[in-house]
Amino acid sequence: MSLVKKFATVASGTLMSRALGFGREMLMAAALGTGPIADAFNAAFQFPNTFRRLFAEGAFNAAFVPLFAKEIETHGTDGAKRFSEEVFGVLFTALLALTIAMELAMPLIVRYLVAPGFADSPGKFEMTVGLATIMFPYLICMSLGAMMAGMLNSLRRYFAAAVAPVFLNIILIGVLAYAWYQGSDARTVGFALAWGVLAAGLVQLAIVWVAVRHAGISIGFRRPRMTPNVKRLLVLALPAAITGGITQINQVIGTAIASTQDSAVSSLAYADRIYQLPLGVVGIAVAIVLLPELSRALKSGNLIEAANLQNRSVEFTLFLTLPAAAALLVMSEPIVRLVYERGAFAANGSTPGVAAILAIFGLGLPAFVLIKAFTPGYFAREDTRTPMIFAAISVAVNVTIALTLFPSMGAPGIAVASAVAGWVNALMLLGVLIRRGHWGRDAPLMKRIPRLVLAAAVMGAALYFAEHWFAAQLASGSPLAIKATTLLALVAGGALLYFVAAFATGGADFGMLRRNMRRKGSPPVREQSPDP
Image 1 (cartoon, rainbow, N blue to C red):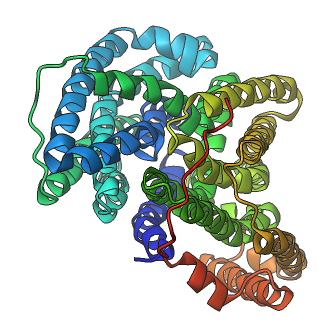
Image 2: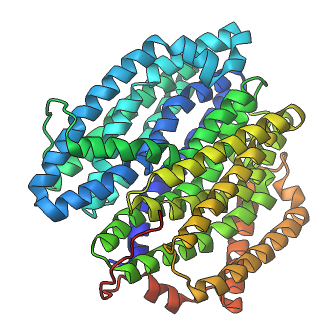
């Protein structure tokens, strides 16, 4: 199967989840707007949702997949099953203890970590504590599900793990639709959504559990013991979790800072949902597929294939995310109007703020996706320490800039901090890969990148002028059908212009992409010892 087909398999499930996520956020914006209940729910959901993205979207896999793949190669399915049961026993016990401790300490966690700014608003604070208490067990489901998703990815069965998150949005959309039908008040909607999150976690865990059994591995519970394999996993997992979840860690920091300003938390959450679509469909798909493929190539000593996998992945991510970034930058306000501007989401008060945040996130989108493409180059070599150091530097940059800009810029200042921190992290990851000789120089890729940037810039300029030309059709007072038709036509026209410009300038070529994305058998080339 070609690399593109594997990316597409994962991306299709992620695309369904993100598309339904739009529906969920549209209903939530209409029901709650950017008011206090929306702030409370988004702050409370940020806590378990951070762990969902951190574990389910690759960080746990970064430590687990190489070790699981090694067990399959050296000891076969029986060895891999034994290793999985050892990990499951330790992971389940640790998660259960952590959840109990967090539930008991939730008021302190919300006050000092999740949303310190809510402490001055007793109603909002108590609501956030209640919602977070209901939703935190979601962490157990997502962490165990992430382990099973890693097993499926190592076995090259990508779809079940990719499609499981779809059910979170299906369930929450059902909750919102029922609440709308019943005419429920905002507080009731908030608690119903919290219980829906917990139910979704159980459903997602059941899906990957069944898929693993169908793949021929039945996991039983073993008494938790610190075996050598488990110790090795834990040594790799902590820095991998910090590294793989750096974007989410920065978002938690941003939420904590934003909690001191009304509506800032929900504004950041609504903008995040939109830019997560290209990030999830492209970046996460690449990270999930690239890690086991790269690990397999390195384990067999095939450096030519490893270098080709890395270069083709970067080429693929930039080809799709550069135009997405340009579109988010220049079309943020019409997008926000179409997606959210109804019901409790006030046109004049909410739209400009969310649009400004979204435009800034667009500037950081390529960096966030490149991080997903660069980190497997470290994780596949079982080096989780180096990217963890870079992640720590990125967090320091993010906190410094956010605290500096928030007093004057508000929530957009937090978005600026996140984007700058993302680019700092991506450039450090690339620089060290090159210095260690782990990034093969690819002359065609170097030629194509500036041409893809040019094609995206041409598309962005055209969309900028087109948006002003069709300002009346895209305005708040325009009928929904007119707004949707106009925006979709502009997006389609912009995409067509981008592809024409990319192929005309030599930034892309269908035949070349098709050949390079196909797996090729290359003669093994043994790797030299990496620089210390």
